[in-house]
Length: 397
Image (cartoon, rainbow, N blue to C red; front, side, top):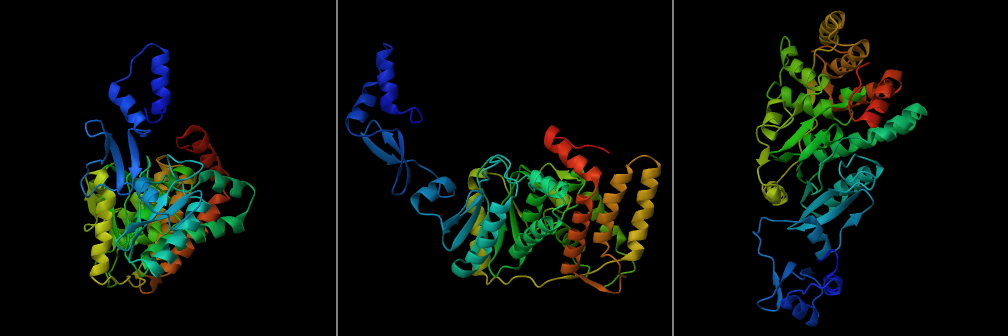
């Protein structure tokens, strides 16, 4: 009724010989125009017994971003994202892609507002939550934008985009306020990297998360390798004879584009850490994420220091190359699969180094960008991206 217009609907019912309920006509006569409205304290409904509007009864844990934005102005917004004041000193970065609102792929608008969120949250707030209430959290990068840049050989533009992306995810990690990421539904590629970049994750139980860039002939380039190394090498601070067994898990997860079909499975694949929270009730997810940000702020949050990794370098790369070569000989993978996986192995092993030389986060990020740009120039990668855009499924070439 509200969508069609109550008065318009009543007139049509009468015109078609249908008598509307008397209380509906009384409601219209009193000046009320809809069954629901946004009041000063939130959503209200018309009570026919009282002949007046009453607040919709809800638990205090129920938060709706759309209603919050109607009650007070947004802090900042563009076509792709908004900054919403959740109260209690907590800011929310909300995605609402203008081009693909269901999947919310990361585009220039979202990147720009994410950087703004990092800046504003550190100046005027005490915590940041990355969340929205659309259908899917984030399906990754805008592949059409990547394909157009690659086919027109706009390497500088692609490099700038990747740097902006890395600046966003690492900015979440290095911000002076706690950053809570709250994913749900499809959380693929860049969406997974955004999730992993948070100080804590408040994931909905039904979260499908994975670094799936291999499926379109690319590698994660938004800090995904850094975050995965943090997870698989957690607690291993001193050089060991070989940490390849730990790196192998990260390699398999990324190179095989493994997708967790639940938040609990995401722990097994290292997308989530033991201390990350799994929320069962989506209606409560935003409230829980906000409470997590408040708790961390009140505990005296300090951002983690940049980490260095003891990685096997050339020896590790050689081991992975031998494994991949055998996979290709037995027709488990194609030559292009081998090339992509070799890039992943090179990044995870720290590039041209040895296990005695610490590798910084910046070095890993540089290796990610180099691999991403290199693969963008590959015709087979461009074929994979084009096929995915046209058919919504991966191409094996």
